Image (cartoon, rainbow, N blue to C red; front, side):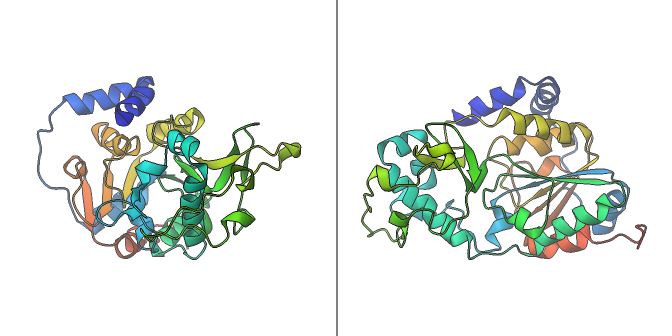
Length: 307
């Protein structure tokens, strides 16, 4: 239901709508496997002026970031989708804040890996040549920014931003712990009891003396995405001449539709992932293996680039 809602939200946009429906309704005639010819990819890469790089949990997993997906993807006895909802926060804000406090504290111990660094280096290098790299990420960990990427669209928000439920003010927040009552809380062990922190001791707004209850500024299940971010994504996907899909399962909307749309429009798409995804057969290239291994040589300086 959530996927359908997001699909409807985005498909109202003309270009996205026409490309997506053309892709979904038209069976692919050529079902040969995508190429793994790195030299052929590099040739296209060397000529690309606007590159879109779509990233998912796989790129951060190599930094040791828990994905909360698949087997073992639980925090205590809950999966992320049990906690990442407005209803869960309304029922038990203390439990939800414990979950996000744990994730924030874990993230503060993690560092960008070679895939993040390769993307950031490529962005900086190509910008000096009048070329553009834009990262469209499903991740909320800010590792792309920490690696040095500046042109990042975080479609699901950030662990390190908060929003006030009273005044609506959003702000970056890197405090550790985010509030005194959460210090030492958030252990993921299934036998850990809820801290049951009183609501007035949870993170509170400091904007103009508001003191309203804060929530993580991330997009929860059942919520719509920021239309401003979607508009920027649409513009990037409309103008790109090369698209990379890095470490994403291609099943989480809306990001799952971006690259297949680009492929349907004739834009070369290269997938960097550990295994096949539902979208793999629609792409021009596929490079299997850890993103931190496969991506750096793909994005390294091409022989035709200026020194």
